[in-house]
Image (spheres, rainbow, N blue to C red):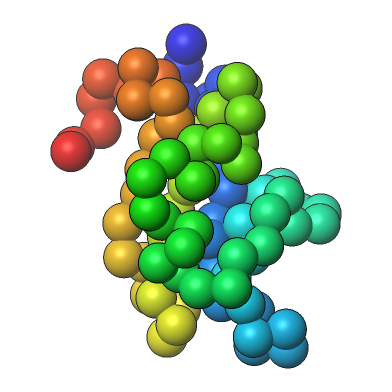
Amino acid sequence: MSDKDLKKYTLIHDNKKNDWALKPDAGGRAKARFETKKEATQGGVLSDALGKAGGSVKIQKTDGRYQEERTYPRGKDPKGSPG
């Protein structure tokens, strides 16, 4: 599977709703919402939100800068990517 086949998402802080939203990079509605970033990033929650298809999730800080990127399931992580 190539990097292009992975659906890409970003976990962002939504200032209007004061929560964290998992939004597709291609646009559209949030796939999932969480009260806190900790709730979203703990033990398998993002993986469950993405389902069997999985995907790549960039996690932002509240200032908009990227904190990290995760791939679910881990086996779909492109071999050429660091980390």
